[in-house]
Amino acid sequence: MRHAWARVPMEPPPDERAALKDQIRRLLKERHAVLVSHYYVHPDLQDLAEETGGLVSDSLEMARFGRDHAATTLVVSGVRFMGETAKILSPEKRVLMPDLDATCSLDLGCPADEFSALCDAHPDRTVVVYANTSAAVKARADWLVTSSCALDIVRALKAQGQKILWAPDRHLGAYIQRETGADMLMWNGSCIVHDEFKAFELEALKKEHPKAKVLVHPESPADVIALADAVGSTAGILKAAREMDAQEFIVATDSGMMHKLRTLNPGKVFIEAPTAGDSATCKSCAHCPWMAMNGLAGVAQVLQTLSPQVQVDPALGARARLPIDRMLAFTASQRMGQPLAALVPHIGAA
Image 1 (cartoon, rainbow, N blue to C red):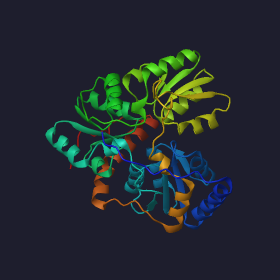
Image 2: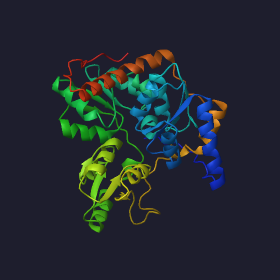
Image 3: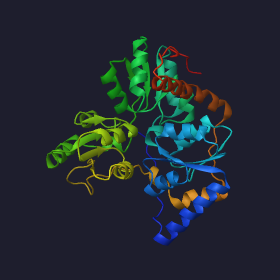
């Protein structure tokens, strides 16, 4: 596991907060830009994205929305791999981020050179990588997946008799392996947020709230997943909260999700799952430090200066786009109820 520091901006006072929001609204129009925000960033940036015609979603939908939107400039409020994915899908557009140092522990923990060596050592395996990876790692993959489509894609690959090389999240990979029975060789990575959820603390919290349903992201450890009433991606958690017959939920994912969960379900109670034991300074500290680097001031500044921009080498971006497009075609076929005849068994890592 590789770690890095994060710069978390100060919360602006109310008058400055209002002024920054007005400035961002104006600059988005002037720059012909659209703001896309992840569920894990500050609630102000989620609300502002939706207010101005942008989007709040997971990383894949953020990139797909940016690709299909008429805006010539995309402002990505999230972490770096999200900006890279947006640039890969929209190479002709200007892609801005408030801070390019906003990264991801899964990305940091899967260096492209080490991953390439593993791919070279196992040429018989289909390479499947999670979205939380660099453009260089994506360029070595046969398939990209998100937590919402990984099960279906791996299940389809297994049905074709393929063996899989999986990276980088070992918890998500193990969950998929348990569910599908696929032959999977795992990279040893994890998310610093989801890896910290504790099953013994979650069991104690369930006893305090016996009617609560437990919603868990599959990047969590297996013993935490075992306690879940529903396991799913950010979109899956939102769907479960909306559809399940319960008024109280314990949620094991980044606390940034609480804003959208509470906004969409005003009559329901959402409790953050615990990440620490009795000796810890907080019971639930589930928030990505790099997501927290996104703030109103940073978004306003990047729109004003048009810097920093996300850059991806065109040749690398073209190769990294292949597994992304393959995933998009797969999920589109599923939505339309079409047979998955276009499933490409193995293209080899370039």
